[in-house]
Image (cartoon, helix red, strand yellow):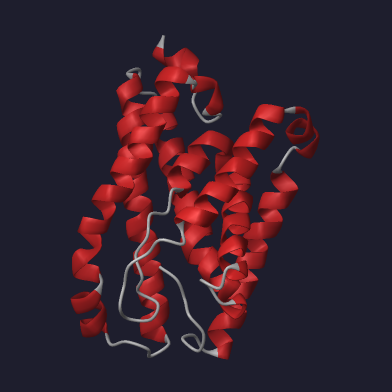
Length: 219
């Protein structure tokens, strides 16, 4: 996914920009920066995730403008650091794609909203749901938060993107169904597998890197 230039109207850019700023301000204000400065492992995860995502997002497929496909990886980052740091890491990665010319600067807020913020918030919401259900089997965290959470987050992001393009008059609803929406379940599978596999590996070998994981529930 990636909004190119001249796809959204000026009004949509303003609205998405305001939503983007509201979420960004909430994220920045909610981070414990003193703890972040003290935790070198968290810093390494944060900057490492931004760099890796920035280069992974260079690889994408798609023919029609605004309907490109790539692995998000935001669910994994959200489970590792929480949604606030995941948003900032994702935006740093998006900045890399802007610097390399893969994304236009004018659509930074729209792309940040669709590619970073929506998946992060959906993934975090699913994690909170899993925590509220109080499952005692650690496979629940892996499957619900990792595999299914990633698939659902990319589906929601894809629907939001299609609604933006449809409301802008770029594509008709039929064109979006034909060129993107009918393939959306196929995009969910690799997204779920990649994120779920990494979550599983971290849970087995480095569970301390998953800050959203309450290990006491599974003992």
